[in-house]
Each structure stands twice: as structure tokens, then as C-alpha cells.
Image (cartoon, rainbow, N blue to C red; front, side, top):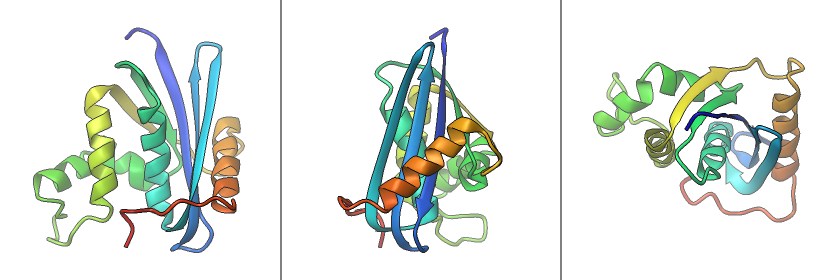
Length: 154
């Protein structure tokens, strides 16, 4: 688990809610892998989460990962421990309201427990090439003809 894998992830929604997609770029040594998928009806935050999840699910062995996202929702919830607290409290936030997207947070936290993951925020639309590519992938997926059903949205 010496080598660092770098993941960039982004989500997009054409309307919120509306058709959505995620884009993910994985970088390891000289290897590059791009992932994307679109959904008929979802939210931007769900797609931001799915971008991160897809990148981590693509890893075949326990890995050391630096995951870049332009979503403060994703980065802060993990790095500041909010998502872990929501889970411990039955997916309730400190105000006793239900946390949104517990199905995806559960998946993401499980993946983070299997890997050594650090999250880093990157400003969106600021010229960071891999983040821009993820945005392109996410938007293209959201506008695609073959859209899946987001089973957890509703």
C-alpha cells in the first residue's frame, strides 16, 4: 500500500433534481481510468457522492488514496467527521433532522474503511485539468440516452 492513487470525482445534474451523472478519473503511476454513468432522476449531491464511490469501488486492493472533489458537501462531511456522526446517530444530524442520502453515505464510509482515503477540496471550474475532465464526463453522462434509475433517490 505504498503508492498513492489519485482520484478526481465530480457530479452534475441537469436541473436539481433532474437527469444527473458523475465523472471520475483515477490516476496511478502511468495508468489512467475514466468512469462515468448517468441517471434519469437524481440530485447533484447524490452524483457528487457517486463519483467518489465509483472511484473507490474501482480499486481492486487496499489502497492509499487522495480523492479530489469540488463538493464541500462530500469533502467536509468526511474530513470533518460529520458523516461518521450521522451514521452513529442513526443518520440524524445534530438538529435531529435526517441526513440526506444515507444509502450513499453508508457505501462511501464502508469504502473509506477498506482503504486509506484522504479527501481534498478543489475549486470547481478553476482550470484543474482532471477536475474539468470529470465535469465533462458527468455532464455528458447526465445528457446521455442510456440513463439508469437511481434506486436510492425518492
